[in-house]
Each structure stands twice: as structure tokens, then as C-alpha cells.
Image 1 (cartoon, rainbow, N blue to C red):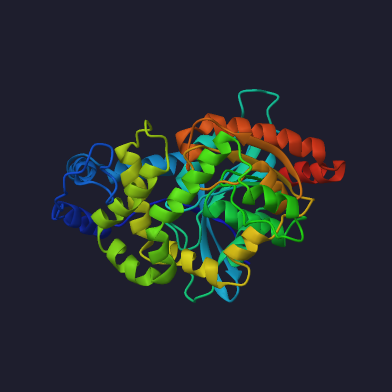
Image 2 (cartoon, helix red, strand yellow; image 1 turned 90 degrees about the vertical axis):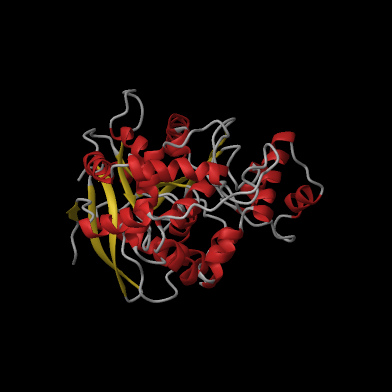
Length: 413
């Protein structure tokens, strides 16, 4: 059986030369004149791309960022078999020195990556001595950035979830907690549905679910029908509806012809930059400033993958039997203590009473934060950490003694 192997990021000079050549010879297309406040209506404006491309040409130092990644993250790879595929899974693993630390898997989504976990690594040794310490595990989704891509169709959410579960078992964590947003929340919800005895608690920051069924939850369905929402709930739901109507074209392409769009993106560093930069722009607070080094590093990590894996997940997730519809339409069982954080600039939302009917049997915390978006571990990490610590206290209070002891025991390797 495969064991974890230490990993250091070391991109070949040939690849960097190819990227440099493509960036230096890139064509920056002209824009049209937009009314004030509508500059992003047709996609990323030239005025936003030009400084990024110029910075990439003149100032961006990949070797510096590569060194920073290697120094910041304890990275590994491990070969894990699932459904006839062997996935070389890349992951971050930081163990705490605290005797009461418990394991937590952090799951990213698209167009994010494993570096989103950086600010959460402080949870291995919280400044507050009363705060819960964690062993942090953060895998890269198969086909994304530094994890290998499945070679056959059908590798969707349920299989990725099994890979994550196998990783935790290989690391000695028989029971564990999970935290995720975007695809990461879907993957961990699939873990909860398939392995509820191992995933003791789940915290998500992307609370989406299907409408309730008439026979199972008639009252909740009635409330939805008459739009029984507070002003803030209505605002967040309208934002989700706006996103689905006006901003989901990328997902339609990726869920229908992921291979075709990946040829364009993987062969054009500037194309990949535009694809990623546009989506992260609309998913954060308007006053949040994305650091150029961060944006270009995320772009490079997706170019390094050299595959269509990050696009294919959109197709695989809706095609498989245990995919998106199953995850969104199946309630997480009572034994998994669920915590939810909602952020106003995110693009997915359900009210608490709706989620209680369809998302999970046991929701132990629910926080509706007044600032933040789709990438809270990057944009407002302290808020997310506060929410996670509040949730884990509730997990401890609501779990049986044997479950909590099992978590503590799992951390004592």
C-alpha cells in the first residue's frame, strides 16, 4: 500500500519558459466603453487585465512564490485507488503539538486551491489556550492543480469523497471533522452521506440545498412559495438567483464540453488568468483587493495541472448517480453535527429553516456574517476561524462522549 511522500513544488524551467513566452507575446484585446458601474458586464474588462499582464511580464517571480509555497505548507502526495483509478493525491498536512488536537480536513473548490488553507493553519496552535487545536489536512481535488487527473469518465463527487476518506484513514484519522465551501462543501457532504460514522462533524460556508418535498416538508415548502423571508434572507437569495441567471455561463461550458474549454485555457496563460480573475472578482466584497501575486499564483497552479480535470468535475458531478442532485437532495444524518457560515457576497444560500428541512438533521450552529464572500479563508479568515471554533464547541457539547473521545484518540498518533 502507498504511503505519503513529502512533496516540494519545482516547476521545470522549460515550462516556465513556455509561460514567459506566451505572456510576453500575449494579445490584449480592446474593450468597449461601458457605463459607470457596468465595467464587468461583458466579462473581465481590459482595464483590469492590462495591469495584471504587465505585472506578470515585469515583476511576477514564480520562483519566489514557489519557494514561499514550499516554506509555508507541509506538502505530500499519496497514491490512492478508487473505482479502478490510481490518483496521485496532493495534500497539505500540518499536525498540532497540542495533546488535545483533533483532525480537520479542509476542502477547497473552483477556482480555488489548497493555498486557501494558509490562514487556517494557525488552528494547529491557537493563541487562545481554551480554543480547540486541530491537525489540518488540505487535499487538492483530483484533476486540480497538483493532484493527478482521472483518466476515465465517471469520477465525480462520490468517488472524490471516497478518496478523501481513504486519505484520512491512511493518515490514521479514523474519525475526523471537515470544513469546506464550493465544490469542497459538496465533496464533504458526500463524505458525510457515505461515511457518517467517520465524519463526526461538518462545517460549510456554501449553504445550498434543493427545495423541500411536498409530503416530507409541506410547511417549509409553503414558506418558500409565499417567500417568507426576512429582508436579509431575501437579499441573499436574490444574489444567488442573479448569479445563476447572469454569471453561470462558465459552469454551463464546463459541464457540457470541459475538454474543449480546457484546450483554450491550458494553452493560454492569459486566457486562464482572465477565466479565474473574472470569477473571483464577483465573489468577494467590492472593497476587497486581490493581490496580484495571489491571482497569478492561482493561475499558475491551474496551468501546472495540464489537464481538463478542474473543468470535468462540472460534468461528472451532474452525471453520476451519487452526484450533485443526490448530495443536494439527501439530508445528512443526525449523527453528523453540521455548522453553517453564510457570507453576503457568496453566490449560494439557503435560509436556516430551509436547511433544517433538507440539508441536515443536526445543525448545531448557524452564522450569517455581515461581510465576506465565496473565499472566506482568504478574504476574512478570522471570521471563519471564529465560526469554526464556535461550531466545534457545539460539536463537543452535542456529541456523545464516545464520539468526542474517538476524535481525541484519532489525534493521538
